[in-house]
Amino acid sequence: MLKLSSKILKILLVFAIAFTALAQNSAIDKKLIVGTKIAPPFAMKTQSGQWEGISIELWQKIAKELNIDYEFREYDLQGLLASVGSSQIDLAIAAITINAQREEILDFSHSYYPTGLSIAVVKGDNKGLLNILKGLFSRQMLTIILGLASIFLLVGSLVWLFERRKNPEHFSPKPVSGIGDGIWWAAVTMTTVGYGDMAPKTLAGRILAMLWMFSSLLLLSIVIAGISSALTVANVEPLVSGESDLVNVRVASIKNSSSDLYLQENQVRSIRYYPSVKNALEGLEQKDVDAVVYDDALLKYLINKEFNSLEVLPGLFELQGYGIAMPTNSPLREKINRVILQIIREDDWKDILTKYLGD
Image (cartoon, rainbow, N blue to C red; front, side, top):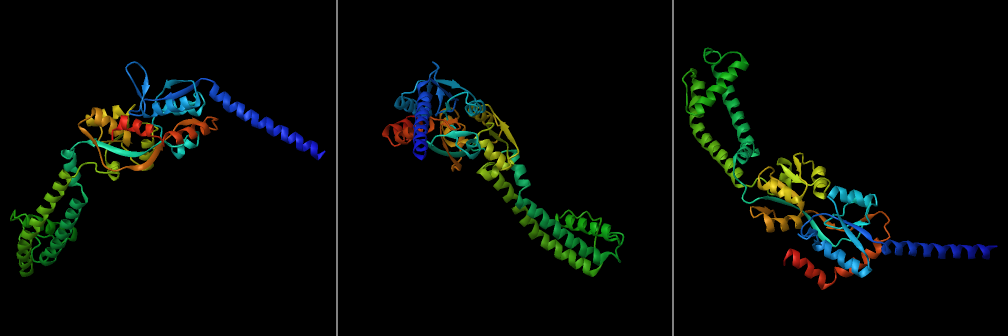
């Protein structure tokens, strides 16, 4: 009985292996639907309607190695990911970032191109009313204002204490209005305006007035220097110099992209969505937004080709990689992975990267 059971198990195992192999072979025997999207220089369409680019040439090499027949089908990013997830297409390749959120609903090949997010801005965009306002409301300016207000409060309170009994016509005996009179006197005395509507009469009040007038000369020069410094810094420093500035400016992105996910996670509230990276860069050029956040390679390629007035800030953040997206448990995955690992070690792959990205 045990021998019979053992034989049955072996037969079932053989059938299971044969069925799996047959399923894998049948997945490649049919003509595959390969989804893609415009993502220069990884996926681009020529005037004749042919596809080219880094990712396209990678797929062509994979298809040749595995003897796969296929056809391309174009989508936007959202439609591309949805079509893969619902198995309407067999795989997708363009410049598709591998991330945890997508891994929950899709399978990915090994990464074939390491990249990250970058920020595109207008070259030399460091002037204008917005920067002046930024300087006026900077931490340095607020420190100056609070410090000056504290000094006015101190001097105003002292002169009121000295004058409230013997000089009630100028400094009200009531604390709130009296200290208010004192602050007003301190301010007009400091600015050398001296309306003459208020003047200390007591000895202590006059000594304080003399000390305050001489101190005001020094204090006023310090305040003017501080204000000039704050405005100069605001006018010299660019509006966006790094990722920490993104929460304060208008940022362009593509809906459901990895950059969109990053901006949402970092609570960047002023996000304007565009249908493509090119459209987003056009919006930046027209100053509808202050920055574009997207994949480094795509930003650099488009800016070098078409947007001379823009630049990509140095430094990558949110490091990531591009992969081929497939439906969950796709039988193609392991076969494609083996070929990818082989291709990216070859000199031909380096030549493809140089062809589109330069040295």
